[in-house]
Image (tube, rainbow, N blue to C red; front, side, top):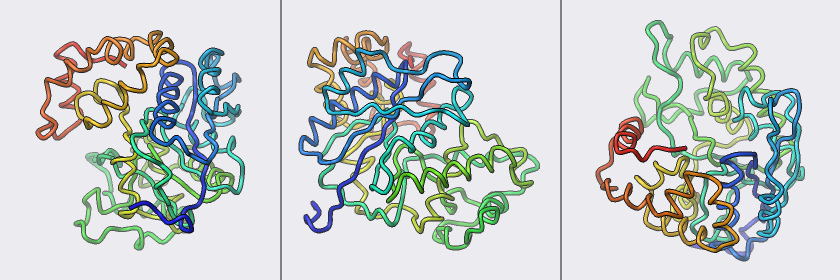
Length: 333
């Protein structure tokens, strides 16, 4: 059900634009947004990391891609990498929040996202931030001598003075990963990007530079952003998304990640949207410069890959899905 005009708060969108794959994904995101939500009334900011000591090569997008993004109504805003950069590019979503206007509600989307429905029907409660539940139990990693889920997560909540017990889903059994607040950082939102970003950065640096004793054998790369995000959201009074947000990772958006996975498992709506917004020459001429988009989308080889799989009977683990795609010769990224 669409929100009442009085219920809806305008918001800005943040995505990250960077040289390589992300700039082409950004183009598809903007094209899909304009197709599915032509009346979107917020700013769409593409945060672009700038060259500096933390990058061995120039991370900026090509001028022609930036021009195409601008033509679609995007605003390319530079930001400097002070803490992460090339060593942890997922940190862009943390430092890139500084590119947004402070005090204005925001929704962050990973660049590998398609808009498949009207985002004007979305009315989050920005005073109760949340994030994507499209995730697997990737962290903490079960180790031979690890202290367990509860000990690790509680040590982090204690580190930042947060109430651990109120974060738990008590419908899930003890020491089962879904009992603990854990998100995919593919989308998240908040009321103030400056305040949210400052806390996100502070928590991330604390965990990276001084892990709690309970987590010293745990890997932080690539999970750091997803370790810290639940803590940040909980600290602002947020938590798991309610049914009003079902459209995200549902009828409104599709976080597809990598194209071979997209064609194997995502909905007909998402695939049709991808191919529709990629078809106009103003988009297609850029996608031809990136091999996975050229072969799988433009040359329609993704449809052959898709025919290999029954969406109602996919492998349980993503690793199994990847292996089947690789064995058929369709894996590319």
